[in-house]
Amino acid sequence: MSALTSKLKVMFRRPARGGVPVGLFVLVLVTLVVVAILAPLIAPYDPNTQNLLGRLKPPGSEARGVYYLLGSDELGRDLLSRAIYGARVSLAVAVLSVLLSGAVGITLGMLASYLGGWVEVVVMRLVDIFLSIPAILLAIIMVAVLGPGFVNVVLVLALTRWPRYARVAYGQTLAVSSQPFVRLAKAMGAGPFHVLFLHILPNIIAPLAVVATLEFGLMILFEAGLSFLGMGVQPPTASWGAMLSVGRNYVSSAWWIATFPGLCLFLLVLSVNLLGDRLSEYLNPKSR
Amino acid sequence: MTDAHTLEIRDLCIDVGDFSVVDGVEFSIGRGEIVALVGESGSGKSLTALSIMGLLSGAVHQSGGTATLEGKQLDLQNDAAMRKLRGTALSMIFQEPIASLNPLLSVGAQVAESLIVHGRASSAEAWDRAVEMLQDVGIPAPDRRARQLPSELSGGMCQRVMIASALIAAPRLLIADEPTTALDVTIQAQILHLMRRLRAETDTSILIITHDMGVVASIADRVCVMYGGRIVEQAEVHQLFAEPRHPYTKLLLATIPRLDGARKQELFSISGMVPDASAWPEGCRFRTRCPLATERCATRPQLAPVGGAGRVAACWHSDKVGGLT
Image 1 (cartoon, rainbow over the protein chains, first blue to last red):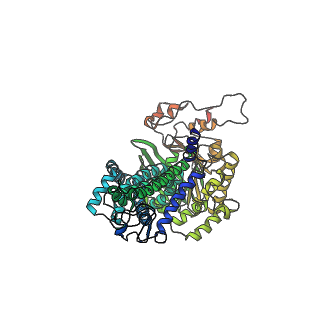
Image 2 (cartoon, chains in turn red, blue; image 1 turned 45 degrees about the vertical axis):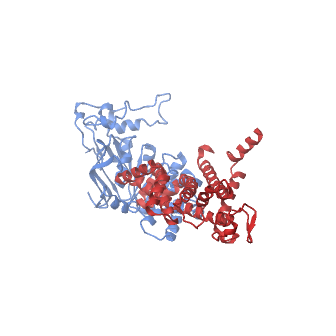
Image 3 (spheres, helix red, strand yellow; image 1 turned 60 degrees about the horizontal axis):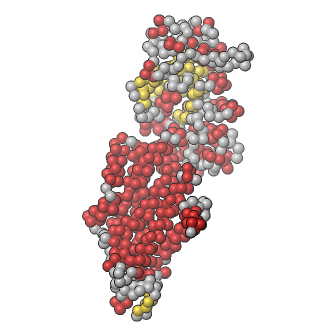
């Protein structure tokens, strides 16, 4: 037993760089991404076709010529197909909101640090304010105002999460700005835009990539949370969070409805977070 | 003065917060001339150089004085105006050659940089010019080297790269802030030789900042000695070494160990410390450490001619300096 746990420890905490575990969760991630992209080709049935005679069927059963590998939900829709299409929503929301909040946060953080003065005061105090409010609460309030839906969820997540990037970009820019090569670039006549995006950004992108990876996992959970509360993507579009929400009503009678989307979420977020951990270990020379 | 001067600095003053760190510095550099600015740490030589580039920032600011480049006055406080001149009319290189290059950008791109930021050439042309420039500064296989990162080059090569990037847009003046301090002696000699050669080929004026009298002797035409934020003596290089006319210069030269000196003799050092900028004495700032100091030194001595063409020294007792040992 102790041999097994120590082996697991070795596999999951401190593998040799490029060892199996990294490959393992990259594999999970890549599989889910491919599944999401190829959903129409992979899914056995249409995710929204109802089959009222095949309601709440357990995994592996059949009704009216439809084979439910992972069971069916309360409207007789195939859970496997819905889980496959749900991956699209989760990943699309996460990718778009990370890109958007990253672009906004990094730009503002770098400008605040480089320009100083009132820009710095305004941006960084705004960051403090945003970070002092629980993010999910902020997101719920904003969705309540803007209304639910795919685009709004992405906007709201970007709007609540940019301060994370801004704070890291701010500190890193401050550190890199005092490097001699930045001084030389200025002595060559480079303007602020050139210095920021050609000289500073490439040198601070590593820690920001780590933040982005960890945020990516969080975005998936936020989207699921908002969908669970009915504030995310609207039915009948399949989303893991919304499937969980429905499944909650049937947990005692039809455990499979909540279990499979939950499992997908768990696997995806775990892989992304482990990847983030490994990335930060890899990029931080002290832990190598 | 005449228009023959590339750069002329008049009454330059720089403050850090409320303290004056550079006080009334004046000198000029002729076309194709190499002038050395010598002084110990804290004498204000680097700040003088940065202010000519318009690169002072934070609490450090220029509080007076003018700079003229080829007859045109520089607007040192105007960052946008100075930016147009940086790299094209005025260039600067620094110590720490490796850290002065962006670790993630190919050296070719960094040499081409000032052509690109000033819109002087398309990126393909700029790259070709950068490769030529790398060849000019004596980097072998410049085609291949241009594509490498600074970490793949040695310190001496990085300094050559920096010189190439400073000179690619053919500036009128190159300011070199301790360009050889971080390099070992053989590389140092090569870099100095390179700077002399490029001066001869392009007629670029050079202001070299250093505390190393060996560097001064091997490259400079003229020397300005700084102490406490002021120039205390200015002379043609041979005159300065042969017959210093300010006690600080004299003592500074005496600190250099000599091969023909007596054996087992203790190395000479100037007694006392450079006072903090907040505690400069009234009058001559060197008087608290000067063996020739008298009551008269409490009044500030101005730079005055002391024989020889263009020789000036700021000392009431410059005629007695020769007797100092």
